[in-house]
Length: 135
Image (cartoon, rainbow, N blue to C red; front, side):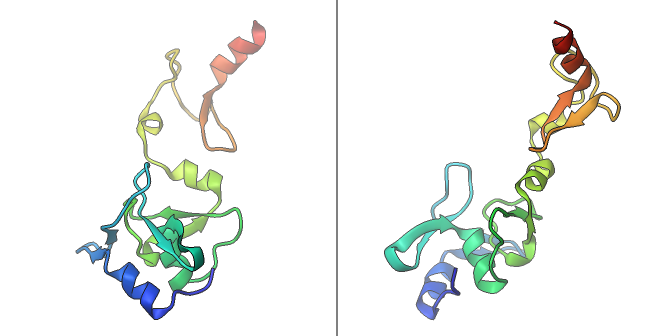
């Protein structure tokens, strides 16, 4: 993607508020999962704001790669709060209720010996896998 021209950048910046923690919080529309979205460029294509800002200030994001919000604030579009990572690494870094669980649904503990992590970053219980294979 090309850098934004002055008019596009001004239009984008009108919807950003800089917080004390240096997050650039997006005040405009959001996607259904909470990321800022904005129409930009020829044909006014809608894109997520953090990618627009990153590409403008830092450069191209390699194909197949994603941006991880290091600040964990989905509406932040400060490029200094972003890191280019693989989709599986981005998933592994997510903090959600499934990651906080200490045991599988059958009651087996998630520990180093009993847990394997899929390429997508999902935990699977080895004891449950073994029981399924025996059946």
